[in-house]
Length: 215
Image (cartoon, rainbow, N blue to C red):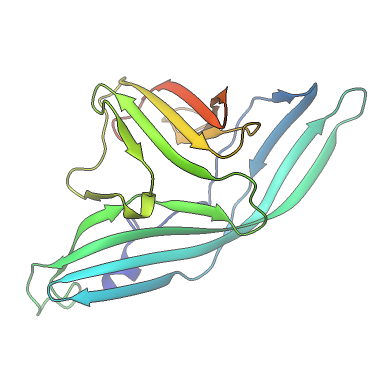
């Protein structure tokens, strides 16, 4: 527990600085821009199951904060709406006891594998993400169906070469939804949203060139 609570890298699903954008989207002749502000986080809920020299860790936290909508319907003045947003984020990990038990900080425990992160609104949900497919020269066909059960060794995480082209295909239960990739780039405005192309039947595709060397 001491190792996990002191960790600010692996167990810190950060939404304090969320994605922003300088572009508008148009839906049925209505202009729309949306963004989130700094979020408020609950204390993390940590569950640890130890079996011999292995430990399975479940980490979760609740986030809350406003969602802002700037809307321009046809033949109407601009409207500004604020909506309260509440969500839960989770991540899992596997530790191995490989070090010296006399270590006062880790007691010999070392992080071996980390899962993908998962997040979901606590309010009414109309869209469900069923799976995500990643295709590139590094990964020809990586299909993720359960992020909390998809583990990677911390010394060999998913990575791409600088400038590598990556195609993402998102599968959902909603045919008329809008999907966005929230990502970070090393130039202004840093946190951005890249829209997916709606392929109909709840499927969305996004093609982009990876700017940084890891996902």
